[in-house]
Image (cartoon, rainbow, N blue to C red; front, side, top):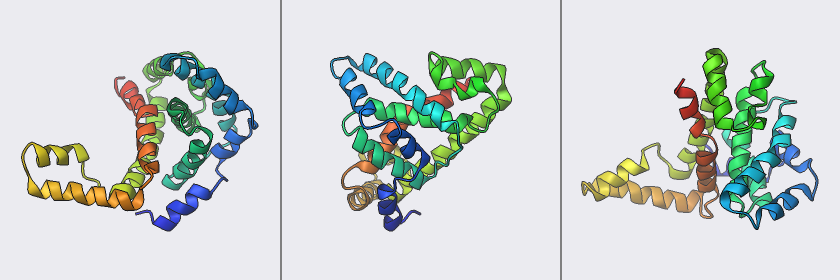
Length: 219
């Protein structure tokens, strides 16, 4: 399990390639993108951010990188500074990172540029139909990210038990043991995630990456 010292150190670390790449666009790039989204509806905001992250994804393909749990914590610590209230920007960041990490070992420009060609969902769907071997490798890389996110959740909650299932047992079946486990998880989160930072990682990646498994599995 991750330690508090590791997590706090990761929050201060700005050496990861993704952070260096985010910052390489200069002081005005991301603030100008944020300003463009302010008068728009949510759908338009998402599209503006998607387009803004295309050059970010292309830069990431120049060098392979890791996405272990501490890497993700470091990246999100910087992302929360750049996009403190811009949740759709953080969704697009996780999508871009997932696409780049998933496709980096694949020798195919079609896969490497999957986030730059129209609908990412449609592109993944089409590519996974025509090349199942590469789709399998892409999916395996996403599973590695999933393992990192689960390790963060284990640190945050202190357990791998399904919270929804525990809640069902506690409040539908009136299971006292399940209620005690839920209370223990709540106390653990007060200790490990008092500001909700790690919860935001879980939520942002939940919306930014996990739909990809559905698109790939269907083929």
